[in-house]
Length: 261
Ligand SMILES: [Zn+2]
Ligand SMILES: [Zn+2]
Image (cartoon, rainbow, N blue to C red; front, side, top):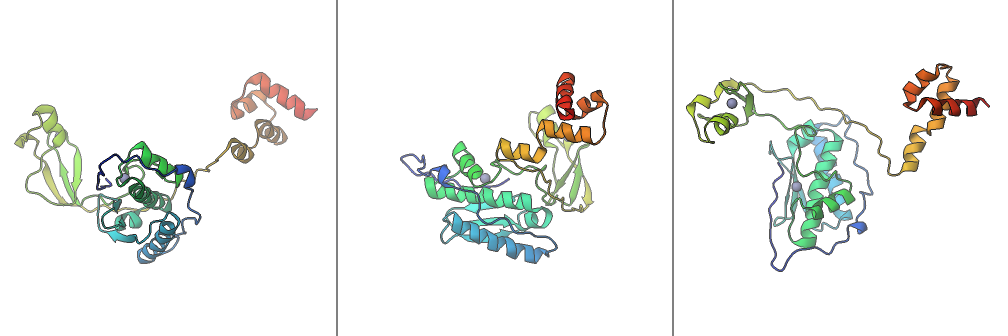
């Protein structure tokens, strides 16, 4: 969970920044291929400084933190953006870039309004600078180290991991469900000892992004182009072609006739 500090300025904080004046980063995110963790950290820090310049974050500091559950953090009073070194270690460029832009969007928002949160105002800024505008990181798109201390619930049998060991821990789900949210020794977790998990960096999912219909069509080929290439490839069964292109039977007929003629 990204934590942010909120500062309220009396008299309202609507913001005057026009998000249309913001643009995507002019420098693309650098490649991290084959770099050691130390080198990656330096390359990302240098890139962050380039972005600070582009988005007017004057005298802002960029650093790293050891946080295991927070991917990135933006502190307005100290004027600093910090990324977790675990984010850099276990994630690919897409996720690292997105977290960096997420925090920069908070900084831009802070400068504009004197406050920041995950309101539509922040989302607009985030999207304008190329961040996906999602509120927090979720386990599906970012990999952060899981706690090495393994526990399980004697009742619902679920397994949980914690970074720190505590003498007494109980299953919150079961306590809520069967005991009005109060602690009950019945649902106390059983400790299985430290069992570290191995994490491997997932490769980025490459999905082509098309900003307009024309570029999407050019990349995919028009429907009739796709059908022509199918026809040229020697596929003769019309029902087969219709299955492949997902088109209406009679429409395939007319298009093929057109290409034949
Ligand atoms: Zn945030
Ligand atoms: Zn349970």
